[in-house]
Length: 202
Ligand code: VGL
Ligand code: ZN
Image (cartoon, helix red, strand yellow):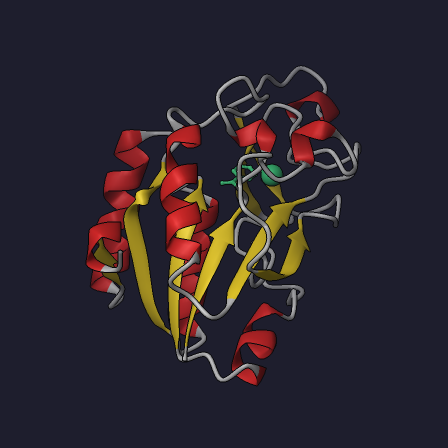
């Protein structure tokens, strides 16, 4: 059984959003076509409280994209984004939702960031996504969404460590930084992920 996992396709990650991923909007038509080829589609949603410590605005004297530490882990400080209940946190309006069975929210603990759809960055807490997928009989997981070098990358690493046969659909994702994505891509290949194009499925 295969499933398609849509990572953080939210307004704040699209051009015009507060943490815009270049060309992030261009994945949406591809993702919508892909959804039609899957019996199970699941999404994640970055969902931060206003006091989230990944926001530079919550650290005196720090600016977005500077580094700090959270619970002993290196942490990029981000512009405010995906604030719970705001339009920026909403799924992109152009994204089809009719095939989506469930949405897993993450990033709600203000003390730690949560790039992966499976666990926070410190692996303190599971979102329940892996057990949900296993309960549906999923063995092959296809990932798309934003951003390729952060939440998609971390989700793919956890998908591999949870034992899923893991595919990244490369033309249905975009990175914040091209260099960051080059490193993420190489690491995912080394860990056994398969990197494919949507044309192999459509
Ligand atoms: C993301 C940075 C901060 C992502 C989320 O969805 O890739 N990146 N929060
Ligand atoms: Zn975030």
